[in-house]
Length: 111
Length: 110
Image (cartoon, rainbow over all chains, first blue to last red; front, top):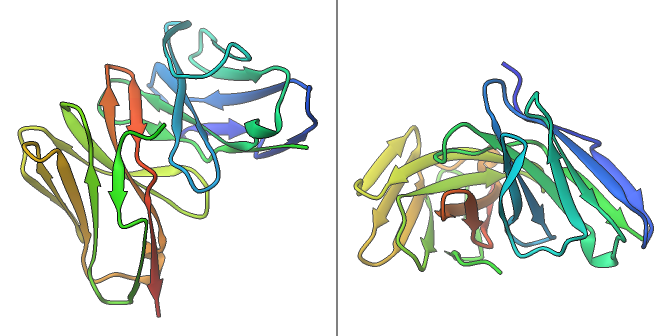
């Protein structure tokens, strides 16, 4: 049973560019959440998708947007990258709001 | 901002000793979860304790929950080098948003 997968593993971008991160949920899961984790900090909730709709959003600007596809996979898009967007981006999938299963993350470096 | 607080921020012990980490939170919760993270990679779910439970065990892990004090503790017994990691408590704020603390960085020395 495949767990949560994310791509790419690492990514280097320059300020002002745009980036797309991808996530495939654990088999049988229909809900995907995205988190940003700065170095030395705990993950912070960006948003959650269910049935292709954004259900809840954390305290992140509109530069952060997402999408969920009919097969439940998801994308996180970040526009106009800032140096402060450098972080580990984590995707988590779930079926109910008890346990979220996390992928290995995408390390984004903005230069 | 983080709304969970872990204590201590860092802990270094000898292999074989027990490690205890504490977590405090600020709101009413239905359950509280503990996760482990190795070397800045993905989080691994360790254990979930519901608000009507006071203690839960899983292998070498023991979690307690005191809802009157809004606090939880994670005990790892007979620590091993492989337990070296960061440990986070997390709880739901609303139905979707999982809130994490800043974590405890645990180092097991051989």
